[in-house]
Amino acid sequence: MVSLSRKLLPSTSALAAFDSVARLCSFSGAAEELSLTQGAISRQVSGLEEQLGIQLFDRTSRGVALTAAGADYAKAVANALSQIRSASLAVMTKRHSDQLNLAILPTFGTRWLMPRIPQFVARHPEITLNFATRIGIFDFDRDGIDMAIHIGPMGEKGPDWPGAECTFLMEEMVAPVSSPAFLAAHPIKKGEDLMRLPLLHMASRSGAWNHWFESLGVTGTPAQGMRFEQFGNVAQACIAGLGVALMPLFLIDSELASGQLVEAFPHQVTSPSAYYAVAPVSKRDFRPVAAFRAWLLEEVGRYKDEVDVVGW
Image (cartoon, rainbow, N blue to C red; front, side, top):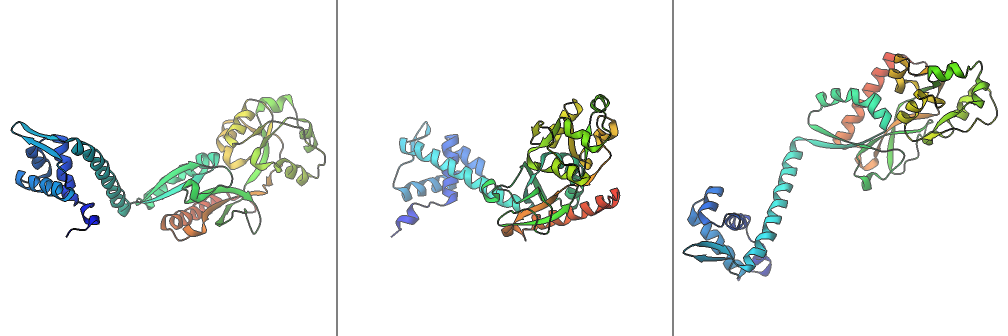
């Protein structure tokens, strides 16, 4: 006696034959599509009808047509087979290509990371990179992210990211910059002069200007100014002459080289923030994460040697 569970799980061969006949309204057409004989298709469909205890097709001298029950079943079977095909393709693809879902900081990703990504792709063609933009701490599991490039406080502990492992990448040198026209209209002779000018701020680095003034021994409350979430927008605001910004110099190489931006005052300091590669502890040994982390550290080391920044 055939169990109920067995009756409810027809073979994929029978379902594929039924699906083909249902779509083509032809046993001979299904036989050609599936590279089987017409008799084999007929036996598969008849066996399925017997297993289900339901007539799926009306067979007449003029051809074959789905019954009402067959039409409903055909829709469900088509969806199920489509899902099985998609799942099979995903598994087959994953055998040859690991996926790394990477969250990046907008400006760092565009200016520093992306020009170097071709080297990683050349070294690891089996790893497919998927990029997302994230600012600040987020939930890796909820967002489906394997690894992130993050800006966080300097120090032995680094950023406080629960359940994650933070690998230090690099510090950054910052300096006040502005457009040449703004600087010509607002000459800066000493650090104190900046206190009265419109200063542009990054939302994620609220204490950056205070840190810079403290490094000069300048006390007081700086003037209020615009606040932005991305360095790219800060740079554009500077170019437009809206004020002075404290910018990581390596992120505005092109603007400095072109003369769109200039150092407003010759005093560079090491930022109290630093860049980290962050991954959930559960993904520490995930091969794409380990490969990308190792490559990233190599690239950072090569970059530090190239720029020879004091303190790195």
